[in-house]
View 1 (tube, rainbow, N blue to C red):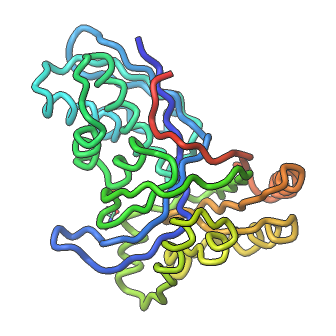
View 2: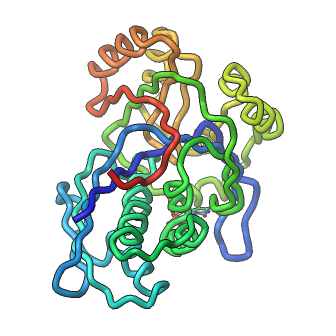
Amino acid sequence: MLKVTAPAKINLFLDILGTLDNGFHSLFMVMQSVDLCDEITVDKGEGGITLTCSDNRLPQDEKNIAYKAAKAFFEATGIEPNAVIHIEKKIPFEAGLAGGSADAAAVIVGLDELYGTQLSKQTMCEIGLKVGSDVPFCIKGGTCIAQNRGEVLSRVKPLKKCFIVLAKTEKGVSTAQAFAAADKAHIYHPDNLKMLEACSNGDFEGICKHASNVFEQVIEVVERVEIKEVMRLCGAHLYQMSGSGPTVFGIFEDKEKAEKCCDELKKICNNVFLKKPVKYGAKIQ
Ligand code: C5P
């Protein structure tokens, strides 16, 4: 039996550039792994794929993206399907934190180890992309520019040591609906080149200054203004929604300020986490 750590991600930047021929959107993103992690166990069983999850609100069958990832792994390697998967859920779902993609990434990384297939990261990412656009990043992890569907990944300098406060409001957001809303709206585009420059230089101030997420223009999260205001008053350098939301994150250099911010946010929000950036994606424990 193997245990795999599956870190969540936040988007330091997200711009929608257009629509691709395959119906997906062409994106320019800066992704950052954070140490809010699901724990996935993978083992061989008596044939077939079985999946259980600590949170029974999530599907525990072939509809679960982690199940789909296992299926894609066996199809790609030609190995007879045989996996028992359990997901210990810590990452909130429909949150803009790639919780499902993180699980899928962990399953692929775990099965590769379990079966000794020694797939390259690139091959694992290709298998992952079959089940979700964020899976390749969740395999690679760290700090990356992500383009096209999100699978064209370039590693940039790691985000400097900081504290990341995450606040997830109750109502989840469907990514598909968020893209549909963006298609109908006129989007104002942020400065991608300035963000690229800041990331390439590991310029923390520049990253905070040029960070942006265009989904904030089309996705309404009732509590977002209030959450951001708490983060600002507590001294966050950056406060922004992640992905298609609703999670809002705040970045602090000072741990005490971040802790104080968590205390304040807990008064208005049920899911509040104090986390750090990490340099890894799905990894065997
Ligand atoms: O690939 P994934 O399953 O994460 O995508 C979820 C939803 O977001 C899908 O509806 C997909 O069409 C949309 N999406 C998109 N462009 C991307 C990534 C996702 O339109 N680059």
